[in-house]
Length: 501
Figure 1 (cartoon, helix red, strand yellow):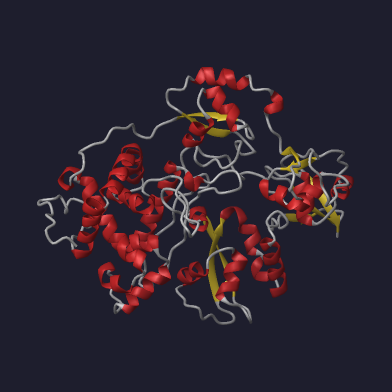
Figure 2 (figure 1 turned 120 degrees about the vertical axis):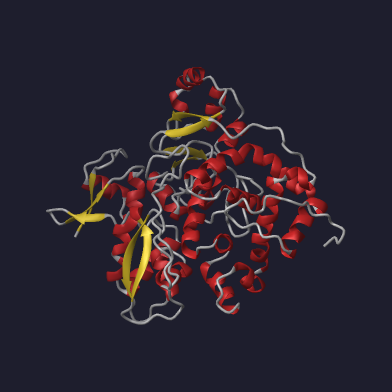
């Protein structure tokens, strides 16, 4: 602390929904941002010119205090490409599991956690849900940074008083600085001149226009059609992870607002058909490559390569052409400006037991505890975190045989998870081993039996014949023979026979 630091007087500290308490902990952050590292705050204020108008609008729509947009300063410095050591991604630093709960699509092709607008919508809903749990914005922010279990532990060590400042000494170091850092940043952001920064900075608010394009279109071709560089196109579409738009339906491509849409569409139609990718691509083997390296490069499996190339040997050579099945994209149409899988949050005011209510985009299933079960095992079988199960059910690590646990799973995979309760321990562990090997366990669970006692599967969007064969452990030629298919063409809704029961 600098004892000679002169704090501004008469700041509008009481004009916000989130209490901007000024104490020695907040003052330390004020000193840091204004005296020790003012260039950091100045960079954040410059980025805020672009992103904060959009963020404020979304927070108003979601019924969340606008000043909470300053939390993104602390999370990422308003950097859509930020990635933490814990694999938290984007401006709002969502881990994959939490992003999925709030509808953010993340697959091999796209990661909506990197989209500023979609991630902001998800963050506003998450913060609102946390406030509904705790009834206090300081605790809600702390819970954004730490697990409910960690926060509850700190509260218990503080004597059970549900107050952030009482729990402060018992929190991890990062969380101790989280709320004071937010308060200091908000005070500066709302009164920049009082703290020695410019009143305003040059720049344009976040904006774009949307044009729908086909899936698997190369970004370089789309950039040429728009008259911009590929790097500029990626800046407007930070969720795109690969060289092309994701497969499936139309993709809402974001372009600069000054783009001539008619000219773009005319150029788009001129892109040669051979430049428009299919669900497979050809790879020319380079020196030093193996089938495993090639599979990882394209987000597929070695088994998928064998299934798509007849007589493929494990020994490959430079210059050899290999057919590569591309991984599927999203199960639903990609949204332009909202989390693709978003549904309305279902939360209520917290009960006295502090149990967490149902997250968005999920449905509740029940699991009855069996002999030998642990919270960790159950979390693996349902693809959630152990602390999720503990907070959903208001329990610790101790569970008893016959106890019913409520678990929230994605709506789209309800049918799979409903079967888990009836499976034996060995069956559940077998599925878990498959998943750890990278196999798609969900495609194999969506089966039925026809009148001739054949196991059948209904084709879904983005399925390929080779992926289906691999998922069920049958040969591609066998699958073709059972269904009188000569090539690889299948269609959504088609019923395929897999094997005789």
